[in-house]
Amino acid sequence: MKFSFYELLMFILLSGIQQNYAQERLIVANPMNLNYRFQMHDNNPVRREAADPVCEYFKGKYYLFASKSGGYWRSSNLKSWEYIPCKTIDAIENYAPGILVRNDSLYFIASGSTIYRTAHPDKDDWEKIDTKFNIGVTDPAFFQDDDGKVYLYWGCSDKDPIKGVEVDPMNGFAPIGEPATLIEHNMAQHGWETQGNNNEQNDGKEGWNEGPAMLKYKGNYYLQYASPGAQYRTYADGVYFSDKPLGPFTYIESSPFSFKPGGFIGGAGHGHTFQDIYGNYWHVASMKISIRHIFERRLGLFPLYMTTENSFAQHSVWTDYPFVIPKGKVNFSKDNRSAGWNLLSFNKPVLASSSILDFSPSYAVNEQIENWWSASSGNPNEWLQVDLLDKMEIHAIQVNLADQDFTLGAPHDLFIYSYYIEASDNGADWKRITDKTNNTQDAVHELIVLDNPIKTRYLRIVNTKKIPGKFSLYGFRIFGKGNGKIPQEVKNVQLQRNANDKRRFSLSWNKQQEADGYIIHVGINKDQLLNAIMVHDNRYEGGFFNRDTSYYFRIDTFNENGITKGKTIYEGK
Image 1: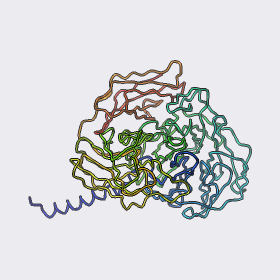
Image 2: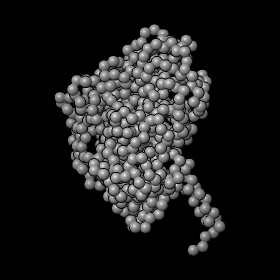
Image 3: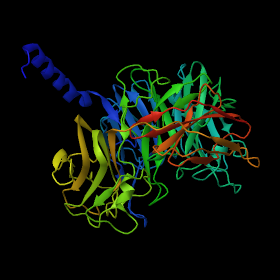
Image 4: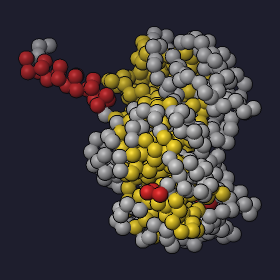
């Protein structure tokens, strides 16, 4: 077959465009791919942690701070993060950092009362300021109003309220007046403030209301807070609003706005809302593993938008799938930023070089970060293999490394894994598609986007260096496009509100044989179903609802081929 000069030229140009397409797009997936630090040896199993994040744009970069990280990160694009170790902040190991951008400086506070300042956060040259703020606070958060006045909010308790006070930055951040009580506990009304992975622990104990953060939008003040506890998948952020920075505040009934109980990794609490350089809003929050320690946690980044309900909503349900960081202003209410790739690896057949008891190879593909596969050693050539059962189009692979039986503890150098990923059409002849044998990054939740998609049936990841533990994976997640049909719409939906506890709803429906799972959309307005919950069974029972609020529901189905949107909206009074 002969081609004209024009056809050959277009082929070359299009090939080049396709090769650079994945590199040009800023594609990420939660949890955020950071060098999460191993924690100090404390008679608990070794684990990594980062939580209670705050992020601000300052002098052309985003600066991200999180508890127990020994430093912080900077980024120019919200995808690639560079770690900056920090020794000049004595309180860097304290929980719950707070950040203030003021004039040409960045201010830091964490649980306690000491405040630090720098004009150059790219360097480790923070100075302790002569503070007159004499209130010991937990989970502090700064806020600077349009008139230059500065406020500090705090709270972390199952009993005490969220409080706030104006402070004077020209006088060592001395309090101006007495602290005001802003948010009280209200578990009896707000089901999501009830402890438990399904808000089920109705034992009279209040949830931990904590982690306040303030955002001003169109003249109103939105005070965000977290509940019921960092160790639960129901960890979420709700919000109150006022026309004054110290209230009084009114609860927003669509709370929680940051909520992710389902999917590969759950939890979206104790977060912080910020704007990117284009004016888009984002919410960065804590996500939970909580197996080796209740504070074994990760960070998540979520697109957020304002709603007509005088509140916010964020895209959380699909954000542990690949999504795209925009390079301009985007209407997140109409665009969830999905890369359009489906999960191909869910519950597919798996083989491994070895495994240990209670750490089955199947756990690497079951979409639950709380359990994982572990090889019997950390030697080179330990491997895990997934059979997709058919040749499928592969676009990306997320490698979630689990650090089984590691012996590292803080402080420590960055730990760098070394591995490669290979593909096969028949399970016998293999071709390497990703080579991390000379890896230089401490990247334990890396989303590897292929420069060009491939069609294959088998994928295998192989360890290539001796590690101080066992080679293990929370998840070996493969994204792309399946070859079959999308599932049918759900039928025979049964909806019931618990007569004895109106904070709880239950739903069930006919199981769709082609479905891998379902998305339950929930809202207080049938035209704005702002929350979404991913489940893999044909039933759901949850208790995060407000007692005296009516709700609307819609159920979508999904599989490796796509999504079928439910057509019917169900009302629960």
